[in-house]
Length: 308
Image (cartoon, rainbow, N blue to C red; front, side, top):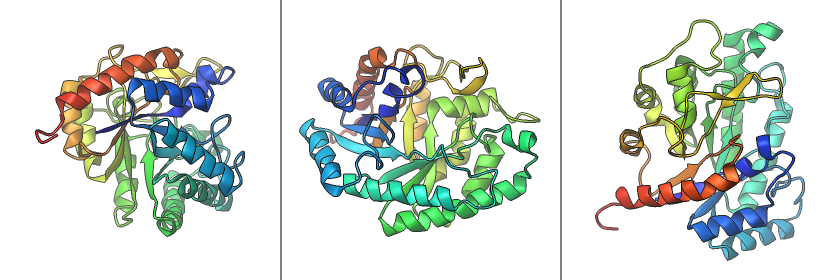
């Protein structure tokens, strides 16, 4: 089990006006025994726009190695693009490829994507859901072809804060992408809870289950990356006090039963993959990092194969 943590937790949301610099993040992760860092590829952390040359990018690779860390993946900065409310996704695809090139230069193998725009966009802009879903699928298939050229895989993180956040919609897209070998689903234990148990930000009739394990069984065969963190069944609030996307409280401050969840996820995501902690939008993420490191250390020891 290779443990990692997403660097975006220290640069956006509550940390937007007080980001923790990348060197400080890597120092702490190294000291706490993490194996890797998952890169939020936007300023002030390393990103393709601020590091345009291969020499600059190689320096980041050497820096991360110097901390005894690896990169477990990258969250590509695609949020400035349109995917739902446009007839032309060329700019989204171009930005995606730019992040693929950056990933290759950094030795990263997994690129995270989402549907970029909020679930309210269908009603607010009068957009046809079926047409939009077909466009998302077509765009991601083009992206997958690009990623394959770079020997990369794509992982889609479904969230309550983005379009197509109902279990049936998620599965429909995954089924349509099933023949794309390098595309899969990013299972986040917190998002899974708010998507499938709470039904957070679902438009119209809600689709919910008593336990996220039911959702896990639906998407399990498509999982190619995992984020682990607790959930208290709430969403982070935007500047106006409205629900945005899942809150990510640290382990022990939510209600998830990891004694049940971890073994269930391991049926689809093996022990020897990356397991990434996601503290996105938690207002004390920096202080909670040590708690998460201890949880992952204990998890790693508990579920280690007998031969390890």
